[in-house]
Each structure stands twice: as structure tokens, then as C-alpha cells.
Image (cartoon, rainbow, N blue to C red; front, side):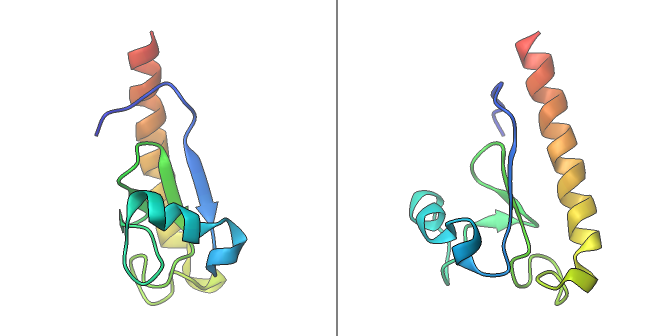
Length: 89
């Protein structure tokens, strides 16, 4: 994945209206109205999502089950920022 110097973008949505996922899926693709991603990491460098149904488990779109997804995505955001910072230096 190529990294830039821009800050990562995150989005939590239990439905597409919360952050415009309908527009996002037109840009980065995806089926069923959701963006293409791997556990919340999209194909667009620096764009991450949370709260989608079955992001990783059945609880992904529920507040009670999102902790594992949030930790995973937060780790990927940290990795992205570290690589972007190193590239900018």
C-alpha cells in the first residue's frame, strides 16, 4: 500500500447515511452498498471504516461488539501514520 502524508480518515457508520458511504462506494467499489475493505482497511490509502455489518464478525455493526474491530483498525491507522511520517521526513 502506498502511503501519503495526509492524515488517515475514519468513518463509523451503522448505516450508509451517517458518512456518505453511497458516494464512497462509487469511488472505491464494493458490493451491497458498502466499500471494498479488509477488516475496515479500504483500498484507498488512509481511508478506514468501522461499524459496517460483518466487518469482521457478527458484532461489527453493534456497539457491544465493535471493540475488536476498533482495536484492529486503530492499529492499522497507527501503522499508516508511522509510514506516512517516515515518508515525509
